Amino acid sequence: MPGWLPRAMVMALTLYGCFQLGSWAFYQLIGLLTNILIAFFLALAIEPAVSRMAGYGMRRGLATFLVFLAVLVAGVGFVLLLGSMLAGQIVDMVEEFPKYLDSVINWVNQTFRTELSRVEVQDSLLHSDWLQKYVQNSATGVLDVSTTVLGGLFRLLMIFLFSFYFAADGPRLRRALCSVLPPSRQTEVLRAWEIAVDKTGGYIYSRGLMALISGAAHYILLVVLGVPYAPALAVWVGLVSQFIPTIGTYLAGALPMLIAFTVDPWYALWVLGFVVVYQQFENYVLQPKLTSKTVDIHPAVAFGSVVAGTALMGAVGALIAIPAVATLQAFLGAYVKRYDVTDDPRVHGGHRPRRGEPLMSRFRRAVRAGAEGGSGPRRP
View 1 (cartoon, rainbow, N blue to C red):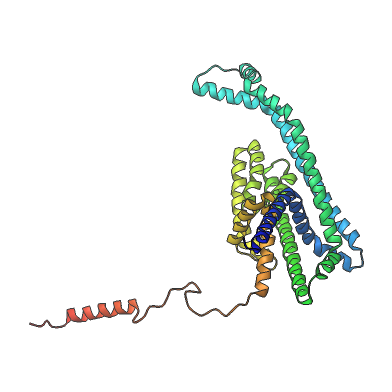
View 2 (cartoon, rainbow, N blue to C red; view 1 turned 60 degrees about the horizontal axis):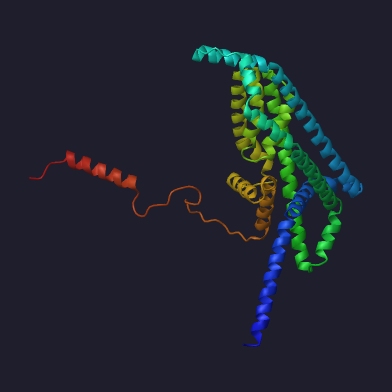
């Protein structure tokens, strides 16, 4: 046996063991790493506001706390508005349920010539096996729901703590990162950090402005139609339509359509038409002007990044996909060398020039020759 073979076998087994250990540790810490990634992008989003407040002489810790307090107040207010809307709608639906049931039973009796009554339908529903099984499963799943809620609150608290530290100690974190790099690499890292801050902050602020415009437009429509809970529905449409890319507008418009349908079925069609028209206005007029200087990426690239982010990280990936791709695009654009584009018509959407005489010129010449040949004397 060669003398190097045992050492090579030991080294291969060691590397394989380290790989397995690293894979196990990564899968165990995937939740923590995801939370840190979300916190990092959240810190990048509020970095411009914190830096501006710190530029006026305020401490970064206090500035970060005030920004997070404003975000918390806005989030709690949105939840309260939405909760009150849903609670009111549930109460109204429970109160109006007997009328809905009577109308459905009357329609069934008239259409199919049956003799159903509300008492028989209620008794059959209350004593059905599937309802009893559903109640039992719901009772046993209360503990699971409580555990999920507590876990979500703990995760949210962890994300806020990490993002607070990232934003408050941003300069210290950059100094610690640059201290282990040579001077030539330090400039590139700081430039990449600046690009990430600009793109992420610009994405959040441009989306917030579009959410405000969308909410105001839908609020005016809902008030004109007389749909209840117009403020809460407008806030819902504004936030969901902007922070869930591509399909967020249609998902957000489903709830106002449902509420409007309870008032008048035609109002639901009005809401649907307005959502479709506003989506086109936003895509072709509003969004290009607001995002041309912040997150200038092609809609197809944005859609593909959202799909890829969802496939990799779920809802978290869908949220951070666009700022991540915009940061990567800006970083590559800063370092990739570009050249002047040729004047070939194919580059500008034209057709490739044909060699020789153009087709229309040849056609005109053939027509002219035929006309002259037909009018002249014939040869014997």
